[in-house]
Length: 89
Image (cartoon, rainbow, N blue to C red; front, side):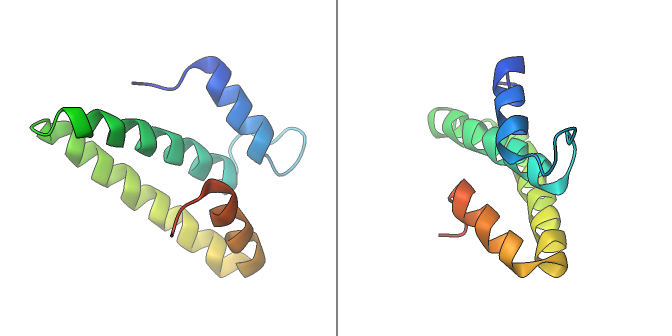
């Protein structure tokens, strides 16, 4: 269920702010979104896996806090990021 090294590298290169960026809020949000999507698929077939559901809720909360941070810093950057990730309907 964890992200593969290749997928992590791909997400970092897609969402990095500058050339040596590996941990900006955008990269973290992209990785969290990937993990949330994978975990959501897992929970569709394993409805009684409550510990994974709790982990999913923690990941969603962490992503929400990071998105709130970006929204406070720069609203255009926030809108562009949620558009690229396809979140917030």
